[in-house]
Image (tube, rainbow, N blue to C red):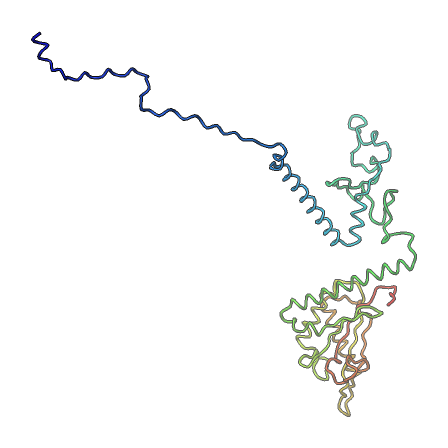
Length: 334
């Protein structure tokens, strides 16, 4: 009893500990999970795919190839287009003894597959990679074709009339002289020493051929006054023209011209003799530059009878040398 009285009456009793797992009275309740749902419409989903990009790329590639083909055809000459069209024409293979001759006919008795006699027709290109055969065995030349598949080439046709042959020869000569004129002009333009004299060389088409006039001007004269001594720059000019003429088989004609200035009274020389002397000096320059002997068929001196400027007989341009590249025989119509 005495011990019980010693305990204070107001002594607080500690609360019992909470059981494990029991929720705390002040903890907030857990939030429900958020669920996202994506809905796709079937009618609209196809527009966002990549199939249309592939189709567009194919179409653009085809259009680019088409316009490139049109440009190439527009820039190709007519004769090349005809050759391209002939290349893509189908060819019928004819029956032949190819199985007997192109393979082996016994031990070491076979024949080569490229033997021309074992081919069903004349060798032609039927693929991008062409098998090349020697000319002595395989295909025919342009003017020797005998295969029925070959189309006649009008340039080498055997049934052409004389008039057609004449026209073909005229066209070939004109193209050759056009190329000569262009070559001389370009060579003079690229020459540092002679570029300022390129306007002194003029070209004229005549009935006999292409006439090349080398004319004087106020500050340039091919020859000394009253003589046939050729100036150094004139020699360079003649040599430049000779380089292009030396590669052609055509024959040449040289003609000398003077102005109307007469020689003094009592002189034994005239403009006739002077023009001939200058023609002869030009002939020697041409042959020294590579023109073979026999190609120059004639030289002439016409004095002042064919002036360059008919309105002014004293014009320096009336003094000139004419070199005519003659057409090959037979003579061509103008």
